[in-house]
Image (cartoon, rainbow over all chains, first blue to last red; front, side, top):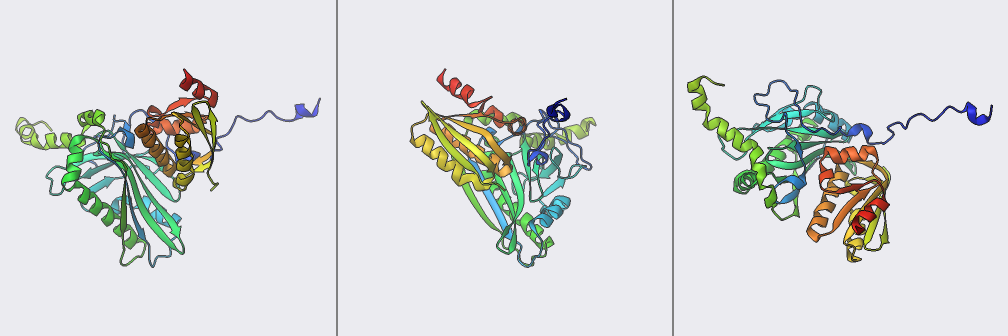
Length: 252
Length: 115
């Protein structure tokens, strides 16, 4: 027997990639498992990246230094994941997945697409990435934005900073119009309030949220205008307008 | 975290960006400098060689989107090679595999450009 014979054959290559556990596995169609949501308009949809939207592509960043907080970025992210829904402003509702914010899970959400809108947009997100300092959601077809949004915390000197960063395009021409007519300001307010709520929960008395927007691609992609066929905004609007007819005919 | 390194090679009309280490949002300067150098050198096609990629987070995938946008805007053909199964899955998960040509290795990518 040679020495080589005593050496066991190499085991099949283990998944040694350092980020291996942080990413979700690819799925063709989404499937939501949440409790309490009224409308699941996500199951059966595909995800939509920033290249697949219609409007201008923007990278929007909101950050807040956690002044007066002793929490590390990792501690902030643990709490942010656990209590994500509670940090949302009243303009929206987030229905967390049963398994929590972990890669591969799908959450549902209800948001108002425009200020004062009587329509509630029911859509969702998929958790595509999560580690101990950040987590990322990607939008499904029909969401008013095509892209992803990352929630993170990091150390800046001796202070922890909480950050929300989106890379997105509006999904279709109606969503782009909505953004131009009040939607942009509404989203700005939404994420500022969210970060303010996160900061207060971490012990910051007077959160000072700063924001920055960079236009990554100023072109509108007219070939993606057909995304309108999946529009959650239009579907929600149709649902609202036909409510009296459904009530009369007794259909839900 | 390991630093990002991007080495640039040229094979005829095709430039290859050999990416090694980690790709995160902190890698922007290295990636964009190499891309700009390749474009300034007149390359109509660029292969992103991912054989040396060790780690990528969601910030890193965002940088790939930025590269794809720049390439589309500039009429540059962008191809990927040397992706492990894991990173192929990430491109499938985010549907970026629909926006970038993926080849087994650099030679196959360069051959695809020259056809």
